[in-house]
Every structure is written in structure tokens, then in C-alpha cells.
Length: 481
Image 1: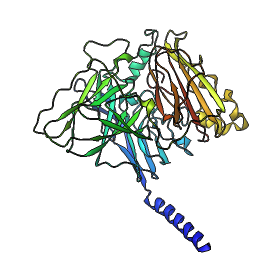
Image 2: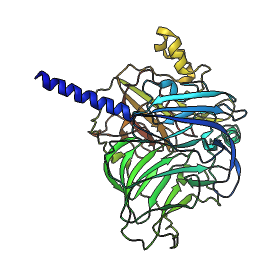
Image 3: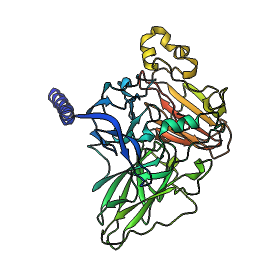
Image 4: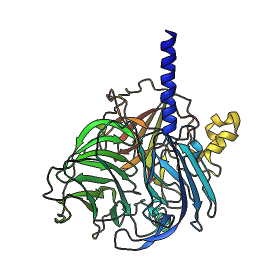
């Protein structure tokens, strides 16, 4: 018996040491500065680059790796920060990159080192969390490979989607949040991009299975995505592995990610278009000259034509609410802490239109929230310490938290929670009004970290507060930033 126990302990230790030996330190040295770019071929403009280049580099790692990013801010007169969207940063809250929440912004002419270990496989992205900089170009995909990935595939394709503005964000935001725009109409993008370009071609081989990782890095527009004459098999959303589910079209809102398996045809007789189409329902007005679509091609044979895509009058995307996580985690039933957030838009005394949760519009504190928590002793459990306009909620470790989000606005909004994925247990139809607690909840709910709430509808989310000292800024791109 003793010998058996020793063998088991030795085997466990060996596995542990093997895992450690496979981990690496991945180091990036990033000089953040201005470059010029013209990704849609219509207008050259200043864009935020890294090491003199744009599009930005892919940030890649493997589960268990330590990632070190040395940031040198050379933007001249703008501070910056980097958020690693979807990473929980468990034990590394100060590396989350949300300026005003987990760190001070990085002043121009200074440096900052991000240093954290990644323990989550999946598809993520990094972006500035300061001054609307990511629509000006400071964003890129973040891919974490899994040595125990549960599916077979031949090659990987990374496909980023984004809306693109010809004007820079400081001017757009100034106009957007001003007395001259009392309705809060969001600026409409000038074009859509795939991999920060248009007319993208992707060489494929017949009879192969490709892992296509899609990231919507847009500021505002959700996008419908489909591959003509090909079916997608969804296997991951926002870093959460799911049971395979077939989809002909998906809707991917700003900040969401999907991984799908796509198997190519067995012959090379034709090339096939794939399309991303911006959701025009989000726009208050649609300019006559706007092309909401961006097209790419799966190229089986480069000597053959690239066919024009079929234009669609209506869209019928896959319902992500039906996805089942492979971990089979059941519904959190016993709620310890319930939070209701009523979302609305309204005008303040300056005439500008702002977003409100429970009649409070966010104002960044002068001292980052994390710093206040670490320096105020027992008062850290008093929500008022963080300021009224931080709209803070104090959670206890391992509580099951329920968030009811009532969208009292006629627009669709994506909702993201830092530091956690959540179970999405209810998502209403449009114009359903506020949540009434008479719903039937799924036994094994869909999980992700970014989800869409429909116009004048509601969401109900649950998560376990198992990430100590994590501050959870519920955030929505552009409309609520």
C-alpha cells in the first residue's frame, strides 16, 4: 500500500513538474506611438501603432505562460493603458489595465510593465482602456493555445472584425457627448474591416478543417458573419468551450469572440466569399453612401475568380443562448447577492446625453478603485469610499451574485464584466419591459463574458465572486464608455 501511495505521489509530482517545464515567459517590448494608415482605401489618417507598425501584432501564449509586456507610451499628449479583454487576472488585478479602476493611466513619455500568468485557454483581445483609443487602432487579438485542446483541426485562422472611422476619437467623442447631440446618437462608422483591411483573401486547401477564431474589435457595430456554402461549428465563445453547434450565420457584438470549426470542400472548382455585415439597426441614421459589408474569400484556387457575395435582405443568426458549456456547470441556484441595474440614457445640465445605471452616470475617480480598496482598511467594505459616481457594490468572496439588467433604452447594448464569465440565464425579446421573476431558467446555462441586451428588454446573469479583490466595471463599448 505504501509503495502504491508513493508511486501515485511521484506520478502527480512528475505531471506537475512537466506542466511547469512546458510553461514559458513570453516577452513583448511595445513602443506605442502614432503611425498613418488607410485600411479601407478611402482615407489616410493617424492611427495608434506598436513599434511603428499597424495593424498591431497578435499577442499569443500557451496556458501556463508568464506574459511580460513592456509598454513605452510615446503618444505625445495622451495617456494610455492596456486591458486584456476576457482574462480574469485572478491574483493579478493590478494588471487588468482598466485605468481609474485597477491602475493609473500610463502618462506620455513613461513606461509600464504588465506581468501576469495566463491560465485560461481561448480567444481574447487586448485594447486600450483610455480615452477611446482602441477605435483609433490600439487593439489586437490575444490567443491562448491549449495543449489539451478538445478538437482536431489542421490549421488556425484568426479573423478580426471592426468598424472604422475616418475621424479620430477625441473629436468624435467631443461631438457625441455634447449639447449639440441631445439624443445621444452614436457616430456611424465609415466602413467595416476584416483583419484591418478589405477584400481579404484566405488561402485554404480542400478537405481540411480550420479553426477560425473571430474577434469583434469594433467600437460600436455588431456584425453578422457567414461563409457562403460552408457551415460553421461553434466550439468556443469568449474563452468558454461549448458543445459543438452548427451555425450558418452568427451575430458577434462588439467585444465578443467565437471559435468555429470550418471544413472545406473536397474540390477546388470555386472560391467562396465570406461576409461581415454591420448591424444597421444600431445606427440612428444610415448614410446613403455607407457600405455596411466587408467581404473576404476562401481561396481554393488563386487562378479562379473571386465571386461577388450574395446580398441579403434579412438576417437569421444562430442563437448563442442555446450553447451548452462543455464543463456542464449547472445553474447557480442559491443567490446570495442580487443586483438590479436599470440602464437608461438621459441629459444632464450641460445638455449632453449620458448613460446611467440606477440614475448614476459613471465618473472616473481621481484615485483608482483598487488603490482605495488597498489603502482604506476596514472602510474598504463601505461602498461610499469609492465615490457616488463609481456606483460600487461590495461582494463577499464566493457569493453567488445575480445581476438583473433592465435596458430602458430603444438600442441594443453589449454588456461585459471584467474578471469573470457569467451564466446567462434569461435574455428577453425586444420590448419585453423590465424583468419579472417568473421565468424558467436553463439547467446548464450558456456562459460568456460579453452578451447583448435587446432594446427595452432585459438580461439576468449569475456568477460566483471567486476572484478576490477583483473590481468589476460593467462596461459597454462606445455608447456607455
